[in-house]
Structures are given as structure tokens and as C-alpha cells.
Image (cartoon, rainbow, N blue to C red):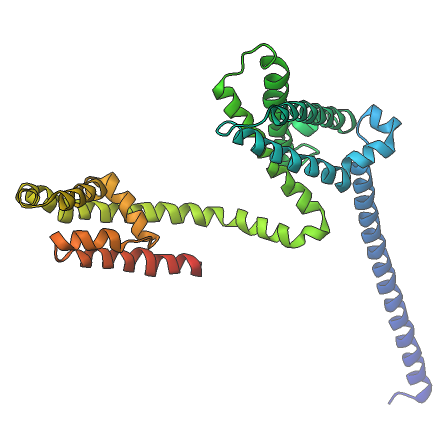
Length: 326
């Protein structure tokens, strides 16, 4: 049997062993916490380094470099882009409507102002952020998508702005096709996506834009499948319906009045050929006055309602509801 003194010694020794184990465990936790803290500090330091100016001019003027990198600067650029797109709309509208001389002069002056402003923005970004912001690279400091947008926007500034407005237009070399190309400046509206993404007040707008972007793949396959369905029905429609019109044309046209012959000619234009039949089926797909097409055909081909009802059941009722569910 173990005496009371021995049991006390064993208990004290066990307590000392437990305390030592707890101490070792605590030191390990402290070392792990130290390692995590060092990682966090390293990440913070790398983030801070990424926010530092990357050019010599940016080092000399850090406050200006910080402003150019800020969401406020993007908001200013976005506001100017909105105004520029409004003036582009007025300018394009003048291609088909008559405008006063004062409006035309004002639009030309504003065009020079916007060209100078966006060129100034291009030079400021290149000066304070470096030329690499316009060079898309997978391993670059700037995200590839942002650099790609910057490069395309720089192309719009130099081609539709500097080249067309300041070089070709004064030389009288701007033709009608070049004026149409100036409408490409409206693509600057896509830069507003970056502004919306960086501003917390536009959170709902950002969600809508993200949902629209995510739906492009589904939209592509929807259009492809719809074209396939419409093409199949158009082929069957030409074989089953249009061919009967061709065979009965002489017999039907002989006993028709002028008004009836005009209706028959219109039907020939609507279903005479696969391409025309596909366009007619697109109208049926939208349910846009499709009875105005189906009823005249029903007058000459009694069973044609089955064809149109089956197409509406497949393309409109079934397929469109599947797309909505997806």
C-alpha cells in the first residue's frame, strides 16, 4: 500500500508536470500568435507599400499622388464622362436634325475642352502611377482588368480625341465615317463601373452590374438555343406551309381581288424563305401581334394553327420559363 506521504509527493509531482505542460502549451500559443502577428504586419506593410507613389514625381508630391489614386478622383472623372456622353448625344443628334450655329460652336468648344481634360488625366496617371497602369500584364502591380480598361481608354483619348479633333479635323480630313467613329467615345461610360465599385453609396448599383455581367454566359447560350429552335421551326414551316403557298399561288391568285392579292403577297414576304420565316417567328416569339400573321395563313392552310401553337408552347411557354428559372 502507498503511504499518505508518498501519495502527497506523487500528487505534487503530477501537479508540477501538469503546470509545466500548460506552460509549454502557452509558450507555443504565444509563438504562434507572434507568427500570425508578423504575417499580419507583413501584409499591412505590403499594402502600405502598394499605396506609396511609384514614380519620382509621386515621391515629391505624395498628396497629389494619393488624390489621383483615390475614389474621389475617379468620381470626378466619372462626372466629366457623363457630361461628355451627354454632349456626344447632342452632337450625334445634329447629324440628322438642324442645329443653330451657337449650339454647333458650343459643341466644338466643349469637344476641345474634353479632349484636353482626358489627355491631362492620361498624363497625370502616367506621371504619378507610372506607364505600367496602361500595360496589361498578368504579373503586373496593376490588376489585369484595370490595366486593360486603362489601355482601351487611352486609345479612345488618343484616337477619337487627339487624332480626330486636333489633327484630322483642322486639316479637313474628317469624313462622315470618321465622325461616326467619334461616337466610340461613349464607351467611356464603362469606366463608371470602376467608380461604382469603389463607392459604398453605389452598393446596389454594383450588385446590379455584377448580376448583369454574370448573366452574359447564360444570355449567350439562351440566344444560341433560341436561334437553333427558331431555325428548326422555320425549316419545317417552309416545307409545310410556304411550299403549299407556292403550289396554290396560281390557283388562289386567279380568283382574288386586289386587296386579297396584296395580303397574299405580304404573306409571301413573311414566310417565303427560311430567313423571312425566322424573322416572322421572332415576332411570334415576342407575342407581338402574332395573330395578324397566323390568321391570314389559317385562311389558306387550315391546320397552320397547330404549327404556331406548338412553336409558342416550346419557345415561349417552356423555354422562356426555363431561362427564368435558371
